[in-house]
Length: 410
Ligand code: ATP
Ligand code: MG
Image (tube, rainbow, N blue to C red; front, side, top):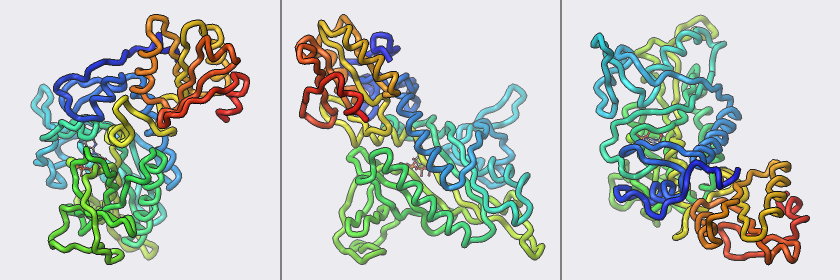
C-alpha cells in the first residue's frame, strides 16, 4: 500500500493520559486510537496485525478440531440467573425501553451451554469443540494498561464437550500444545510459560500462559529448569519449590496472562441440564472445558516485548507488512517499478512514496511502525543498480542488486 494514502499519520507524542508503553507506541505509530480508558479503535495498520494474530489462532484451533461460530454479545438476564452469575461485578448490565434486563457478554458459558444442549443428546455427539472470536465487555477497575486490559476487547474462547473426565483431560493437553504453538508463532516462545494457577470456583488448578514482561500485572515463580511457572496467587509457603522438578531456585518475574485454560467439568452442564445417553443408554452429565486468549492483549504484549527506543519491531508472522519500501529523492521511478514487482510476487509491502518527507522523517517512521524489513532506494544506490536492505531488529545495512531482491526475499 502507498504510505501517502494511508489513513493515519505517525504522531510525535502519545496522548498525555496514556501511560502504558504498548498503547503509547501503538498510538504514535497509528495502529490504534484511544476512544476512552480501555476502549480502542483498530486503525488500518493495527487491524492488519490483529487479523494476522486472529488467523494464527484460527488455524491452530481448527487443527485441534475446533469449529468456529459467532455468538451474540447481548445476553438475556435469565441465562445468567441460572448459574447465579447475574451479580458478577465485572458484567455490564442494561435495560431496554420496557425495562427488561440484559447484559453484555464478558464470557460465554451461559450462552454456549444451553446452545450445546440443542445438539448434544447421545454419546455419538461427543466430543465436540466450539470456538468463537468476539468482543467481550468487562467493567475493569484498572483499565490503564493499554491493550493489555480492555473494557471492550477481542477474545478467542473455545469450549469443549466430553463424555467423561478422561476425554476432557486428553483434550486439555491438546489445547496446551496448540496454545504454545500460537505464542511461538506470535514470536513469544522464549518469554511464555505454562503456569499453574487457581482453578477459580471450577477446579483446583487451571493453567495460564504467562509472558514475561516488565509491563506484566501478574507475578509468577519461574522454574527455568522445566519451564513451569506458578502464579504467586496460589503460593502460600515462603520456601516454595517447583512442584514438577523440585528445583529450589525459582525466579520471581512480572508477567502478563495471555491465555487461560480451565477444566469446567460439570459447573455449567449441571445448571443447564446438559446431559447425554451413554452406550448403555444411561443418562450422564457432559464434561466441559473452556480456553481463552485475548487478541488485543496478545498484540499489546508483543509490542511490550518487541520494542526499543525508536519504536516497535514486529515478529515476522504478525507484522502488518513484510517489507517497508522507502523511496528517497531521485528514485521514484525505480521504486514504483520495484513496488509493482513485489506486489506481483505477493510480498506485502508498505511503500513510502511521500514527496513531502525527508529521509530522516521516513526512517524515523519506519522504525516506529516496525515492519521487519526496510528497503531503501535512492539516487546513490541506484547508481550501483542496488537498494539498501536493513532488518528492523539489526543495525547492519547491506546493498543488494535490484534484480536479486525477489530471489533474496524467497
Ligand atoms: P485477568 O486476571 O488478567 O483479568 P482473567 O482471568 O479475567 O484475566 P479470563 O477470564 O481467563 O481472564 O480470559 C481469558 C483471556 O482473555 C485471558 O487469558 C486474557 O488473554 C484475555 N483477557 C482477559 N481480560 C482481558 C482484558 N480486560 N483485556 C484484554 N484481554 C483480556
Ligand atoms: Mg479479569
